[in-house]
Length: 199
Image (cartoon, rainbow, N blue to C red):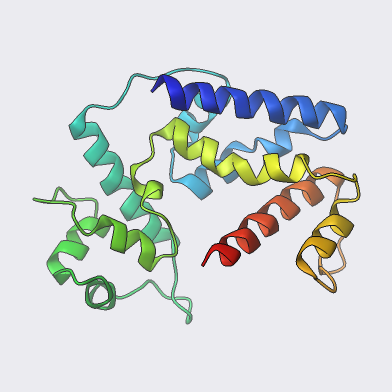
């Protein structure tokens, strides 16, 4: 636990320092609702972590409960290309698991084993760490795109991103972005494009 908490503490300190230096709204960057939505960590716990509160390492039973809760969250938050929840049978076929196992997992019920979790997470385009991270690790991981964006060199974030990835334009649908919103958007884009490069 100490390592993940220290890592989160260092990330939060870095974000606060850079936001202050660049005159950005740190509360907008450390948005509890948005972080909870991205991580599956309950909003109250996310807020406590952002305040610097520490929590004991989870017991094996609590760790398994976290996997089940996050799997149910990931399933509930995801939609297929038609905007509908994924069919349990389709997920099961894709990951080589029994439909009853996937059904129980997405319902958050206890399972005799969790061996298909990496494949389940991959089905939704996530690493298995999405399911297994402690809350501090999950929040810390979700904040990394913001750190990358804040660390961006020249100060002209859009120009840097477009140069780095050869983008022609970035549409914001006619809405002017605040500097903080721009920083968050670019962190998200950088994270997605970096992940594509790794594949």
